[in-house]
Image (cartoon, rainbow, N blue to C red; front, side, top):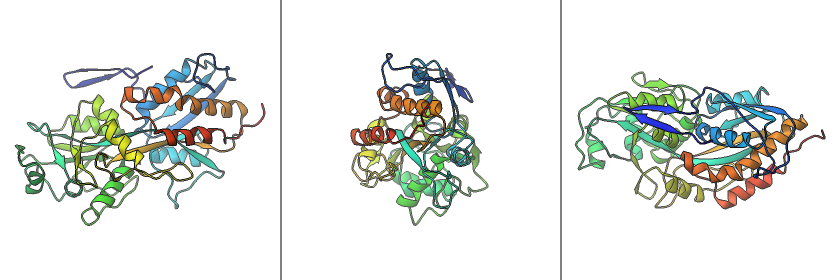
Amino acid sequence: MLRSFARRGGIVLAALALPMLLIGNAATATTPSAAKLASATLNGSGSTFQYGYDQVVIGGFKQQQKGVTINYQPVGSGTGRTDFANGTTDFAGTDAPYKETDTKPSGAFFYFPTVVAPITVSFNVEGVKALKLSADNIAKIFEGTITTWDDAAIKADNPKAKLPDTTITVVHRSDSSGTTANFTNFLTKAAPTTWTLGTGSTVSWGASTQGATGNSGVAKLVQTTDGAIGYVDFSDAKASDLTFAAVKNSAGKFIQPNLVSAAAAVNSATVDADLTYDPINATGAGTYPITSPTWIMVMAEQSDAAKGNAIKGFLNYIYGDGQKVASSVDYAPLPKKLLAMSKAQVKKVVVPAS
């Protein structure tokens, strides 16, 4: 069940734009003949970045296992991690791992990577259809040092562009967000002497900026505000017909956000033993520097047999048919090595006897 979008006059009609998705059907294999699982309901919350993909795989999973329901609320990675740590959900979606200082679940848990995609630097400036931005200029814009689109620093990156004197409106996430964590991680790495707000799921934005909830909220505000700029996941940016900048990477190349450049960034990243990795500002001429990972977090030892089998079935579906449909909704599938590691980790989830 793929997301389908109709665009007329700037209005985006999303076939599955629901605040909470109440569909499921977990399976332990990726064919219609998979053994049917016992009835179970899985509740999850977290990342809005991965939500477009989640809608597809939960919907496809429904076709295989009629007895399993999956509820997922896209409330932001920070809230998802908190819900999971408090034991109020069966799984969580997150684009950033727990920090050492965060409250974590009381038991062992796994990070399961699912897909990857770029975080775009989307803008809405009348008459400007293409833009190149260095990390320093992005940092200055989002900190408020650069306040108009015809600033000399932006002109230096775009000598042929006709830039107006329109005031820049910075749009950011107002909720606790993995997209914010990865975007600010990029600025911390690539513009260390310019960016002063630090990195995290929330930062102290300037008073002149505007906040919005979720990636879709930022996309809508950018879409409707002349002079706006914001960071938005690739899927939501494309669904909203946003225009996004080419961003200078660590090799000094201005790279457009797309699935190929995102996959190149992931291939350059080092994967840790717990399957976390950081593709931000990765090396390589063709890498897009603001590429985001995303994970589903699951307890290592399940307390309920039906739920445990359902979550393992869902993960197996993600690593089977789910990888095949990723690009259709503007996410890149996992590289082969990381995919093999993820499949092996599913087998480590312990489920009690039914």
